[in-house]
Image (cartoon, rainbow, N blue to C red):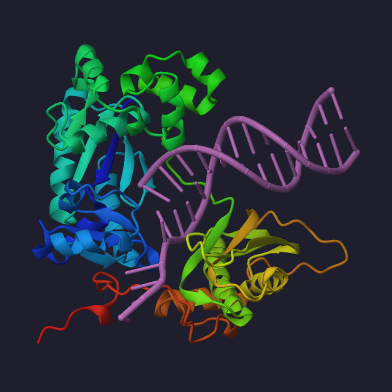
Length: 422
DNA sequence: CTATAACTCTCAA
DNA sequence: CTAACGTTGAGAGTTATAG
């Protein structure tokens, strides 16, 4: 087996720089929803030691000192740039797994092994020229190794020039390389696992690769056993060409300002249900239950804390926003307690099944799987923009909506946001 | 006791 | 001016419950 992993460099930051090239070389970050945490950093900011996920307010001082630019996230833009990038990369292989917004695996079986580095370089050049995004390419015999190869490409290890092909590196060199890489860089080894492995004396990629798979399974988990085997070049994880339907669909968001009243929570929950239901209909599924939850701000220690969720079963599976909203509103009334500063609410559609496998209901007439009204709403919103048609339950003012004070225009998807040339 | 449901933990981007 | 910390989804493992 041979795979490639192509991954955008500082993807969100790079997207912003495509439309504002004067920002290249500038220390800058992109923030999460609500301008809360750092989710993308330019090379200059990484060099300052800023970690992924740091709350932005904690960086204010450093930001002033180094003139760091912070932008709100512009997901519409990033999604569009991602689609373009994936389109270009998809032309290099019949097998492509889009793993996340900024990275994809490609199946490279059947290509001449010594041609792969050149192919990687062509991918880099073409994506850079056609889309504007810099990417790095890792090539290896398993997905886990490919991830690691990509890491080497990004860090410029093993003489990589944006492309790292483990297939072209000798066994001894590879061992020496793995000796120098910390085990937490391995795909699937997170914070907890790193701690546990350290206790067992495993701190490098090499040590993990050379650990006994059976022992890893016994002492830790079957997942780690697979990781060890993959590090040895035995492919345990297949390329997943077409994404299966979601088993659950979630929509949740922190509020731009604290919410106290039931009315506001009801509007937020209705808004989230509308989004989730849209996703549900897009994959042609029905939900059998709705979960709703609310919580106060766990980071705010002086305030009284409260968090609660409830699952509302539906008598009949549906993808009708009206019925789903009714269920969610019933739930929120049940869990709401006055006197708290709510910071976040969320909904989850659960127990999903395909539209054409509807469970019948005793003593009831079965409603159509695709209510005509929902079709109209979806088509209108697709044509005229999200939120064109919505339920009144969503409300109008929405003072709780998330903050995005530093968002750039959606250059590629909204005419009305394009800067005017005078 | 077994099978399954429900819940918790971990990881990833 | 001040306070301020994301979202979505999957899978494995553990515990509770039903039969």
